[in-house]
Image (cartoon, rainbow, N blue to C red; front, side):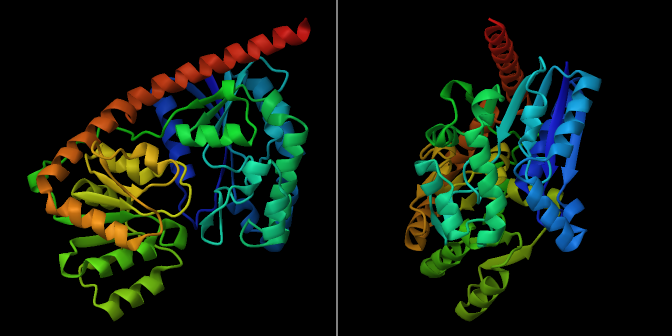
Length: 407
């Protein structure tokens, strides 16, 4: 089997879960004996050119004729069985789907975010969930509010791309299978316009064979891992620790971002001596700290796609306390592998953590449930089998549509 993988990497200055997920899946295919052909680009290519590069990137967002030509030539040369696209923004564009529209290979697109219909990528505006563009099937709200990076000018190329490919039927005509990361995301994207019969669900996976550390050997610590920014709920997290007061367990925060200075000041001014800001750590050190934690907190205030930290926590048998919001409420199951609390609510985060920490035996049972969630859904084997099944469905879809076109 030969697979042509297509991916545009986000800039190296911002760690991206999408890049990590793509690399993990690429390496999985290669380890399992699949011949992989790559067409990869990086946003660093345009950022290194300054303003000229940004303008070029904006112009190529709706339809990049050069990328389309190169991908078609590569597909004709290598004759893949499948073309699997992960991210086309900003350098590749959805033109890739038109470039292979008449070839016999099955075409698959992984939905790492909501960018097919949401200019911001995640349905959030001014710190709150916003689904206007998905609900109305229109880009007008994104242009009105300047949803991409808070700029109407920067939003225009994305809005044009969304409107163009909805109008010319790129998603209904030239993609054989879409991969949503959760059932919640699947339903949202179908609501926005994707054909229901072609949207499958396949979650992220944790590579390798991680082992859970015995409960008694773990640190008495709660852990947060992620970008220190408002949408990740880090301010709510600190406010919850303020509410907990003397009942607060030790909390380690791994990551960096625009809210770091604010958090440092709050920790100092309120005397939150049980909170440690550890900054950005290496992958191995981060995984080690996850493995030794007794609880992971994910207080996001936006629609996460599939947070990498959840599959990492489950892989090491760490229960998760998360916002009852979007996909998080699907991944984290109360009484099985974690807890849920209302988003944007520090008091309820505090109540949840206090209750969890007071019942260590119950927390240990949830840790075993988290590990079972991993073994059931997020291993390499489960992911590979699911991916092969999706590929075969894509090829059958392509074959049937080509036969129908002839008749």
